[in-house]
Amino acid sequence: MKFPYEEFGFDDVRTYPLESRRSKARLDDFASPFRRGSGVTGLVDSLPKILAGSDLRRVVDALARAHREDGGIVWGLGAHVVKTGLSPVVIDLMERGFVSAVATNGAGMIHDFEVALAGATSEDVDEALGPGRFGMAEETGTLLNRAINEGVDAGLGVGQAVGKFLHDRAPNHVEASIFATAHRLEIPVTVHVAVGTDIIHMHPQASGASLGAGSLRDFRYFVSSVARLERGVYLNCGSAVLLPEVFLKAVALARNRGVALGELTTVNLDFIRHYRPETNVVRRPTGGTDRGISLIGHHELLIPLLAAALIERTSEA
Image (cartoon, rainbow, N blue to C red; front, side, top):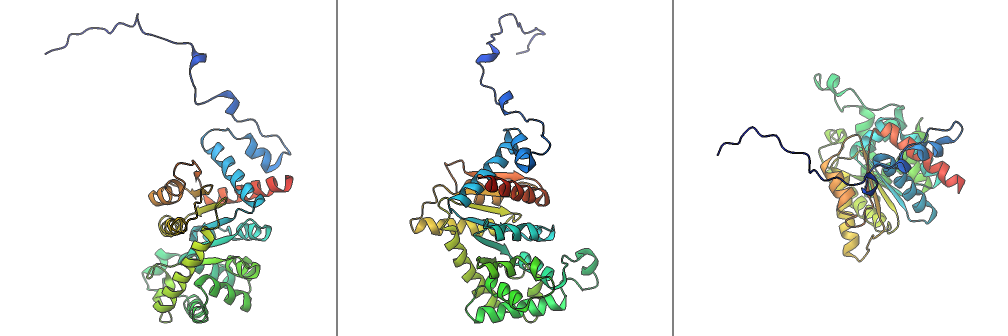
């Protein structure tokens, strides 16, 4: 059947009053101009109550509530957080009581260790790989493996072992170490290792027995921390695979033991959306509660902004 050239008639199109429609963007939710002197609180309050503007407020509210009610705040930190220079911000939050526990991966531990020793980290892989120099810094391979091996033999987890090693030896830049600060403040720090992924595994001092036993011990410490977040917050900052997988298993174990985590808020911060953080951090653990939040942006901007907003919010209270 062939259709004819025939114009569609518009004369009988049905309409409705604009005011009767439910609109998703309303003037009440629009941004307001920033007022000089209103501080970070004024900046956050000036954002639109739409999409990421609303989500940022929700994260600040959840963190402030968890701090006020002792609900707990656990930070999962990918290595990029250290590499982008955010250790001083994290350490300040630790000192102020906004950190209940820290979890990271092997790379995060390595960067923190190198910063404490040398005040610098993150080699140029493209430059070092060709001549066979990549990952071969003597102090990193020897001292960090020694800290892990000796600490795990003494009954510590990997995070405890490295934090104690740095705190006790006090290298030149120890004040910039999240691990040493965690040891000093008695804040749990756990390291979740995938064997073969980290440069220290390329050195002869690496012990699979120590890495495995210590990281499994850290996983059990981490589960204990997550199980305390009934009214708390878990933040995944820059880990695309490992920490989201570990977190999901921790939630599963907590609920297996009868911990509902019914008012848990989860937050993922990264500059793009990844499948596992969105699924294992934002959606699954908070299913049905609308307490999972994604903030998309660069860590070096978002984390200082969150920290400043949180500090101002709680000091005003």
